[in-house]
Length: 364
Image (cartoon, rainbow, N blue to C red):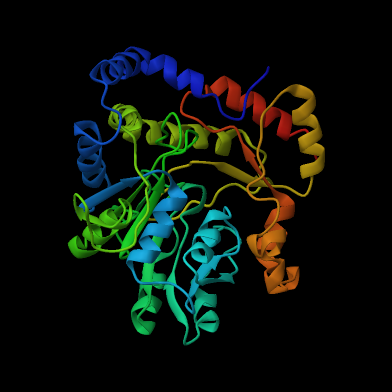
């Protein structure tokens, strides 16, 4: 049975009539930047996220950079980021002139370890970027206590956590701002690059909106140095349609995860299940000492998989200037050798999940 790691065609077929009609409407209107669809999506997504305002932009990395810049973070500043994440979390810090300071993660949860934050804080530390990795909320209660104690800003990286909640509260509402990616593979994905920032600070929202649009307050009235980072009209229209389905898609992701939990062998390390946490299951990540054997089996059978992530960020080539070693990040380093992401999307059938698990259970 050939099972791809991700199959966006299945999703498209379910909503094809809506998507095709909306794309044709946008093409017929001939209006491709801004307009009502962008405003409608921003309003709908801010409501979904529980924030007051949504500032759409070109992608999730831009969202991080715009949020950092709006909070006044730049040259000479430090920002705490997890050692286990996609590189953009740290890259955005460098791109505003600041320096990322890497913090190891919690072994079962894969998110930044609040118990290590205080030892990483210096006089130059200005912010923390907790990542709700794979769809699991970070420990925001502990993180916000530390941030308040040291007067640090919090920017939540929600690129993998659309629909995740912590004690009934949506991720993205715990810090000064939160960023989202709508890369096609995300829980809420566009048909190209797209991103957004949400906040309930109206002053900050206005500043981020100006930064994303050449610093404009009004036409030819440049209040500050900004950039161009726009969500185009076509992507906004697609996202607005998909947003109506997001809640049920995340529910289905949780159902798929429950099938994995049921059919996997007991000694396979599964995603952690915690009280008060609603996992969005962007990815379903297991750990195994037999990853190499499993990869060979999956390759032979045509079962898709991913490694998120094969090298901790502080150990990739672009951060070699920091001189870090594996012993400084023992958990992230250990995870990088054992984790493997299984196929995860709402359209997966129980039969497919059971087949995948049956193959995994033969290894080791």
